Amino acid sequence: MTKQNAVDLVLNQFSQFSAVYTAYQEITAALHERDSQRLTTILSQYQNTGTEMDTAIA
Image (tube, rainbow, N blue to C red; front, top):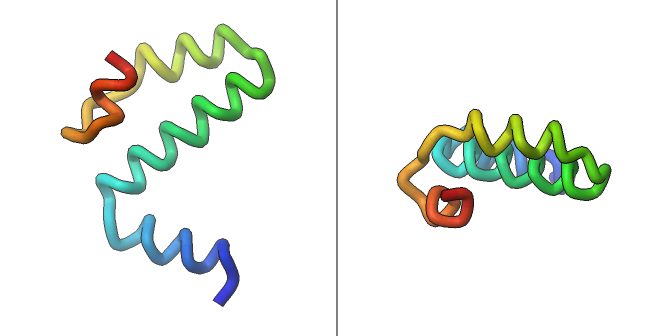
């Protein structure tokens, strides 16, 4: 099993984790690219997941 297959398997089985993982990846990419507009959009459109990510973004 490849690393990508393992990630895909977990993301498909746990929708809440998938939402947090996707948000994290998008935020990381926006920061890496120094794209403040993209970061603002991601943060403003974030929907609560009932996880610690909600606290981090709030």
